Length: 103
Image (tube, rainbow, N blue to C red; front, side):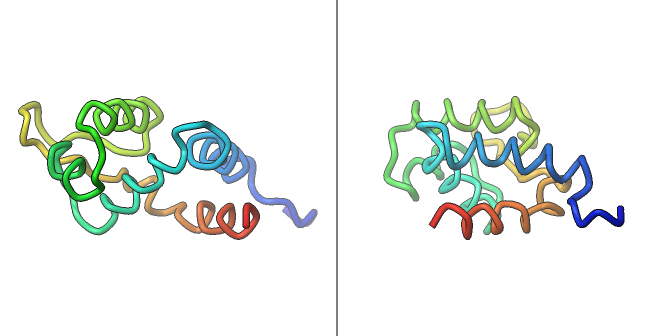
């Protein structure tokens, strides 16, 4: 594109990220969870302990992130870790751009 605009796919991801992490009430918590999972995969209990959050709160936000394709669960059991989607890892620069815009 020669018009200086981001590709449509990036604009759509940025819109999703803005909603999930910056304009919705649970955004800050979801951003904490995402950043923790970027360090290493973790299960819900480990996330709750590490972040000092209620387990049910963490599982709610994990469900929201999974529904939006941000993360996925590697297995079915209680101890199964959550991992960040490769598609999202490739677009982390969009989240960093939003961080700069919201300061």
